[in-house]
Length: 255
Image (cartoon, rainbow, N blue to C red; front, side, top):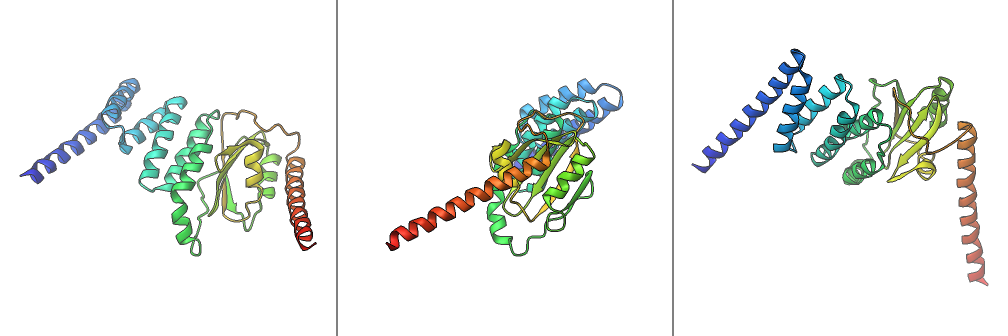
């Protein structure tokens, strides 16, 4: 008897959800997008973990230029997709949120995805096969096209957008305004600290998406090339100093 009641409840829930989605589409079709948005917001208050409702709200907001609300829904969807272990979709929604609202920091989201999927990386590192997307401005394999070359293409074309990097160990992004690097996010960090992590990623994939909005300037550079070279030089100097300190410690111990 209990199982029958539970099935009935599930059926009512499914029918109710389908009805809400259908009504929302009808409101949009008949030029009443605000009614569709209000219907979806009310439904989400009752079912905050409904991916279908949030995706529909996101879709309508984007089509009607409501970037702030669309970005908010993208961030909410990131958490829901992480819980479902749909990490690629979670990353897509995080990237979309940044493109919709450049003021958003995606570092916490990147770190949440990285931590959630880490066990999966550990199990599958040997057979990991990262796919290169074809639905973005341009994309590639870092083993074939280095990060420096990708940055040069963006700079030469004076493009504004987001370069995302995916590898077995890292999820990261670099923001560009008219071809200039203005921010970076990786491993829960942003700015120069994050870029220092990114510049040492040599495997995985990258994809670049154009943005209609400029990003806040966190890294102020006059030349991408000089900035990259300075970063690499700084990293090499630090490594050399650490190596020298270790060697000195060893000598002192021997003495």
